[in-house]
Each structure stands twice: as structure tokens, then as C-alpha cells.
Length: 242
Image 1: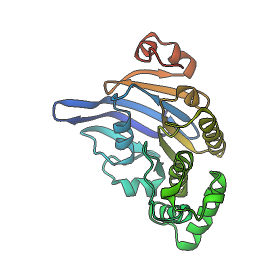
Image 2: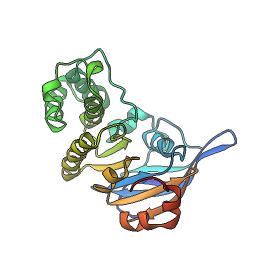
Image 3: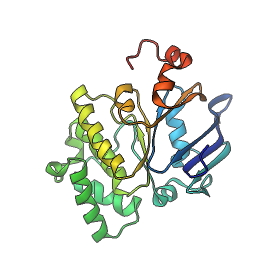
Image 4: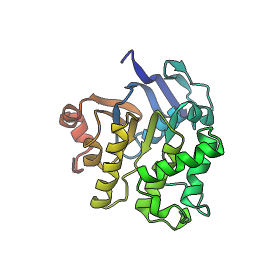
């Protein structure tokens, strides 16, 4: 693993009773990199994210961010430290406007004062193509714009590390392409990303490396071309278009 890693997981495990959902996972992510996470349903991908964000406490192992041990930090402390995330199912405050959602994220997730939060919200609206929907209640958005808002709320916390959980899931091909274009712009700004995705071609268009898990354990890791040619990976994804 890289000695210059922004994020490092060392032998991280999580169990629920007799079921091991994350099994001795070690990985690292360098600043500016996009790491794609692949695995079949039930492989433990979202649990891995929850261990990074602090939503779930590890039973064993160590999580480091910027060289600091954050294994014991609460989710809000990790967010303030620079780890932002989206959720597979968008979770906006439905009766608040898009703009209010972003101000709330900037204030409470990013620790900004009201003036800073308003400025951040305006910037993020433009970055995620949501300016035209700023005053619309979040609960009335289309799926694409709910996905954009989920991304925007994470960005409003001004993360150095952005965790994306199946953000392209459920979108049409055209909508997924629009979202991928926005993610490319975010990547170009230097934001480090770890992205779980089942829309494999979308992930492959951005990811610098892939990390594949199956039954909670690492199956493969490396450059996208090599990983997708791996026989074990092809067997796990048999029937999926890559």
C-alpha cells in the first residue's frame, strides 16, 4: 500500500454474529485518485463504506485518514475532517429546498458559518447543474436530480475524500453520462473519490484503479484493464456487461 495514502484501511473486519461481512480488508487510496469498488450484491461494499465514514464500527483493524488513526471517530467528526459521502438511496430533507439542503450540509457537515455556507451552496449548485432547481423542494426532484442533490450535499461539506455509493444506479444511459461528466469535472479539481458502482462502464470511464470484493473479502485489485480481465472477476460478473 502507498506510504503517501490519503486513506488507509489495515485488516479491517466487521461481523454480525456468525456472519463476517467485511473480512480482513486492507486498501489504500492516494490523493487525487479515483478507486472503483466492485462486487456482487451482498458482497459487503456498502458496509465497507460505512466503516470508512464511521456509520459502522469495525470489530478489528484500523482506519487512517491523512496519516491519522480515525478508527474511533464518530461520523460527524470524520465529515468535519474531510470525508464526505453519498448514499445509494438519496436521503434529502424532502420539504426543504435544494438550496436549503446544501446550506444545511455546509453548516452542519462542513462546519461553515452562515455566510460561508451560502457561498458554498451557490458554487455547488453550479457545479452539479442544480441552479435552476435551487428553490424547488427536494422531495419533488426527478431521480437524476435527486442523485445530483445527493452528490451536491456531499460536496457542500468540502470533502477531500468523496465516497460515492452507486450514484449512477437507476439512471438511463443518457442520465448516467451526464452524471459521469460532472464527476469528471470534480475529479479534475483534485477531489479523491472511492466509488461503488454496478454500472460498470460508467465506473471504468473514471476509475484509476479497481478493488473487487466478494463475500466480504478482497477478490482482486489493480488497474481496470487487468482487473476486468481477471478470470475470478469475470466469473463473479458473468452475465453482466462490462
